[in-house]
Each structure stands twice: as C-alpha cells, then as structure tokens.
Image (cartoon, rainbow, N blue to C red; front, side, top):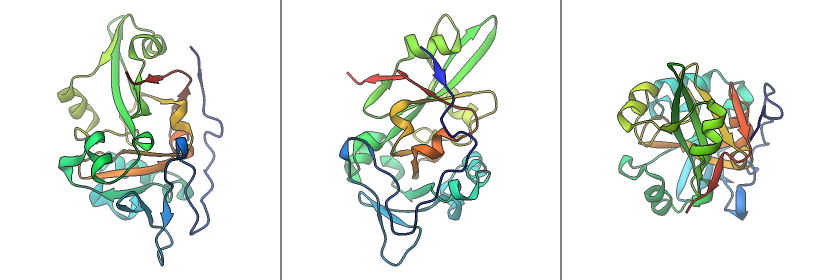
Length: 222
C-alpha cells in the first residue's frame, strides 16, 4: 500500500462566498447551511457552528495554536460547536444532535516499535469505518506489530481529552494519516476537549502539516 502527499498541500484552500455551503459531505448527507444574518456561522444538524478561531475557550491549547497557525482562508473554514461533554462519543453525539454518522471522523492513535524506536501515527477515518491497523498502518510505520495506544497514554501524550483527540495540534514527530474518504467533504472531528466538536472541510485536513492521504487506510466497519 502506498501513500501520497495530498494534492494541493501547502496551498491555501479557497474560502467559500458567504451564504454558500461548505462542501458536499459524503453519501448525500445533509449539508451545512448559512445562518440568516451571520456571514460565518452555519447550522448543521441541531448545532450552530461558529469560526473556531473566535472561540479559543472551546479548544485545547495545542488545537487553538494549530488553527491560529493556518493560513487565514483555511482557518476561517474551521468551525466549532459547543456540545454536552457527556455526549462527546460519536454514537451519542450523532444521535443527540441529529448529525449524520458518515460525516463524523475519528482520530485514533496507533504505535509500533522498530529497533527500539516507537513510531506513532494519528489515523483519521470516517466513523462508519475502522482503521486497518494490522496491515495498512503497520506497513506504513514499518513495524512488526502496530496497536492502538492505551487511553491514558493517548490523552497524556496528545495534551487532549478522551473523546476530543483531533488531527489539529498533534505533537511533532507523529505521522498524520488520512483515509481517502476524509479528504473530501466535511468532517466532524474533535477539538481537543469533550465539550465541543470541529466541522472542517477535507481540503483543510489534507493541507495540515505532514498530512498523508492513504488509500485503504480504513475498511468498512463490521
């Protein structure tokens, strides 16, 4: 299995005109719609999403720093919505806020060792799929065995809360792997904290530093 640098990496994603949708989610899912009278806010599901850079209180510190470091046009497309932290897990969130499960994307941490070196990858896959850890991720990391990080270690190393781990603001040295399904349309991902979620176009995710789009990174969920 091969990896490819995302097409357009290093270029600023184009910002949509006010009042337009923010891209087409997969599988004909409901699309975000503009809030009347608000140029940058949208409604998606039962939530109102606002520019994330305007709500640092809803972001973990490394996530806020990562969004602030994006080109202005890209940062403007990253939206955040406040949620009940008890509903941060994908199944509960999608049901409670009338959100399509196929738009949600999970960021899972996988690691393996080679010659005493631990190699870590953050894998972003649609919530309706699962990361192919034993084959695709293992080969990409070039390790004999790859496995999910224990919860406690994932939280400590990422500086993010359980249920809020996100591709934004990852520690240096970690690989960022995106399934091809995530590269297009909208994704709901973590914000680093349980009390909010981010809504972000695939074009912004693929332009994150070091992002790799991987064919076959995810397989259909059982």
